[in-house]
Image (tube, rainbow, N blue to C red; front, side, top):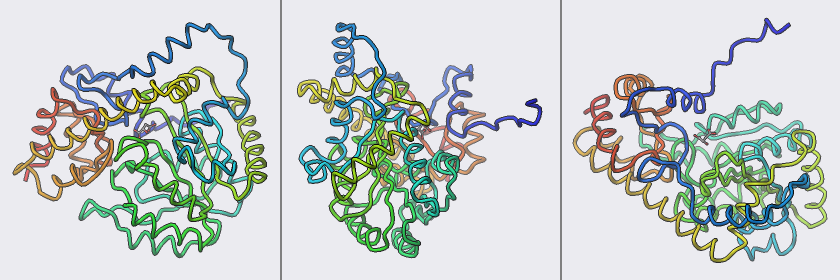
Length: 398
Ligand code: LMR
């Protein structure tokens, strides 16, 4: 019966991460998947989260189904973090926010919703974008196109071309944007560039679908979400997918949210209802544990402060690794390639290494990057950074 089912070629990120786990070499370094590892190369369990979990386990609470939209406290706390606690859209109850199964789940629920109510709309993602963006939207039946984004020559942004391309899109097109820490390039729009983009999205009646998976890993929690507030204030039709995988180090708990900004509370209520029906059709309702941990931290001012402090340490550590790469590679690789470690932001840097060089790095040195040359800087630490510098200098030396 299933003879015609072809073999799965694997996922460029998740399958590579599985290959890494199987690699027996002791000096291997995982710079492939977007996971933050601490200074000892360990996956951190944040203290604020640990405390929230201890309190939760103490309660021995029963586990009924959550509502289709998810845990109310979690939704509200996440919405405050994304849009600002006192934002106008929140005061006016104009945002429908639902708990989702991670950021990917948020994208899928949003993609299904858009397919249902905007069946003729096509989706536009940055060139390049996170590999799974295309997969999720195509999987929901959308046609996915790209807009210019990354400039391979400079390692920066082709903003004028991006803006011009978006300014030519048909009304109701969906434009997928990365709020911060662009995946895979680490190249973000400045606030001035967001301010220039907003009126174009608004005037051309486009739907901005903002993916925010790295809030707190760029410039800070508020700074990284600034574009969301800016687009909302400009009256852009706005959908936001967010994730707590990275900033709470809760990858396996699959904690995400999907928010749709509406023109009125009434509209938000109807949109919320239809999103609930999408969730019911996919997985009925989200899981409890991770959402309770996140809500437990964000609802307690002491734990929230502690979490923010821990997150700052993570952000600073990534930055120090960027500096270490930049300093270590001085005189050893082309200056244009070296400059990227400081010019790009967040977890990822687009190293400019070719597919061939990436393969040599993996085969000969046990250093894992994505085929595209994306490096997860958060996998570096004091113990492995000079090894990685030497390996890169060897494969890409000037
Ligand atoms: C990544 O880009 O590496 C992460 O977002 C993990 C994933 O699911 O791809």
